[in-house]
Amino acid sequence: MRQIAAIFKKELSISFSSPIFYAATFIFLVISGYFFFSNIAVFNDYSLRAASNPYLSDRLNLSDMVVKPFFGDLSIILLLMLPLITMRLYAEEKKEGTIELLFTYPISDLATLTGKFCATLVVLLAMLGGTIPYLIILEIFGTPEWGVILSGYLGIILMGGSFISLGIFTSSLTENQIVAAVLSFGALLLLWMFGWARAIAGPELGRILEHISLVKHLDSFARGLIDSRDLVFYFSFIFFWLFLTLRFLNSRYWRG
Amino acid sequence: MIIAEELTKYYGLKPAIQEVSFHVNKGEIVAFLGPNGAGKTTILRILTCFMSPTSGKVLVDGLDSRTDSLDVRKRIGFLPENVPLYNDLSINRFLAFSGSVKGLKGEKLKDEIERTTLICGLADQRDRLIKYLSKGLKQRVGLAQALLNDPPILILDEPTTGLDPAQIIEIRELIKNLGGERTVLLSTHILPEVSQLCHRVIIINKGIIIAEDTPDNLSENIQKKKGLRTLIRIDGPQADVRNKLLSIEGVSQVVEGENKGEFMVKSVSDDKIRPIIAKTIVESNWGLVEMRSKDISLEEVFVQLVTEEKGDVES
Image (cartoon, rainbow over all chains, first blue to last red; front, side, top):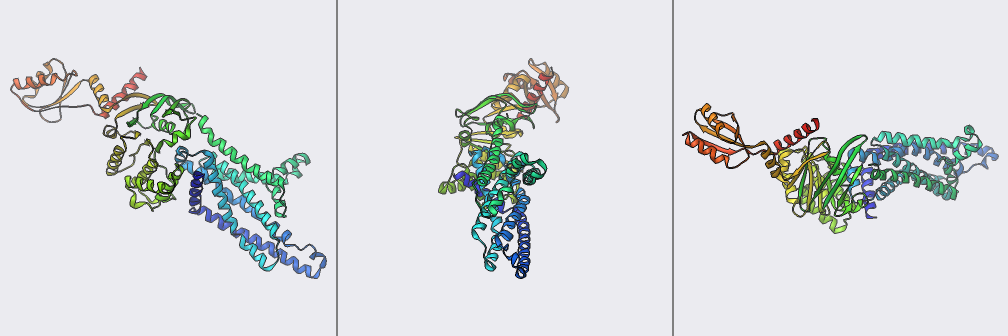
């Protein structure tokens, strides 16, 4: 446990002293702020029109019109930004040679991986923390449903965790950070696109592809619904990629 | 303490080392000596569990490096080649990280950081970021992390490469002081380092061990093969002296030296020949200005062994 904490602290120190974190967080907050603003603007416009048309006012709902699309927007920006955060985790250690220290210290690969994953999760939380003021604005000027917001955040964190686990895997494959980022971004985008596959792949295959799409499982969270199927999906996804990373790291013992 | 049995490692189809076997006893300082690309780093990386051999095994204190990797790693302090460090951390933070990973905590961790930074001369630099340190200081930080938790075995991959002469002397002195109780294994291609530091040397070329002995024994053996060499300075007629020296039984070659009156006499490897040479000169009424044995240096041993190896392979 102490060893995991040591890796965790080291990773956090390095992440928070790296310009990549600040650049990615800055862009993340600017774009998510813009999306939030545009969601509010649409809602505003809708409210004005609803004032003269009572039929429309039935559909006026902050959760559906602002909060849900906002989490959808966040997931897209994270898809772009998280590969930049995860790309260095193993690739940089390989490039700089510090992997030689890590692999010759008396620490298991599992402990190293756990420390790195948890630290990156904290980095994700720090990025998401920057979006809380937007929701406070909502609270000041409206009456948002906090249950939906919390469930949305849980979904985003689980999805972010999935992005991170895949990003760690691609980072363990190469010593080139750009290659790691491109691989992880490409794989995530592909998994993302599976969500729209029904139209192309036909109903049977489409249904399967939809199930492994990362975006579909966020929907219910963003609507305030915590479904065990989605939880199982995200946890399995995270464990699957972490497991593959571990197997790949372990392979140095038998690859000879 | 360390037993390596028939280690072979292939990178793709190319063998980096082949059937390398050796042992290192407790408290010994042993050097791997070899030209660049000889396989020194590969051997050290296998010993430190960084990679596995294609075949063969390593036992450290009776523990197999493949199956008891974590226990083996606990016993080893390793300074990798080129000293990779986390540049964005300060020395203090980096050592705290290394110490925690090695299982130190609380006061013990603080004491160990204190001790190792003191030994490595980093005590007043601890808050500096590693990326701003000079090469020499980085080398010391690398050494400090290897010393944390006082491991019984130290493995140092080219510990003095890239340092200036003053730093090299300091680091060598440091390594010498670290010996004693500890077992130290180092790799180098710098020959004086070996004769100054090590009890035993393993010479490796193209992935194969070609000699293993103390530096003195190695020189002696080569000397026996190549014959004894004596440098003499004589005040007398050059040509006569040469002929007279050649006429002594056991002298195989006499080469005139750079300075006037200087001769390099090659003879059979027998110490009795020197008094005979001296007697001959004195009896001829020439002045014997200087006479000293010209020992074979480790450089010559190394070149001789590597060339012999080449010759063997070619023939």
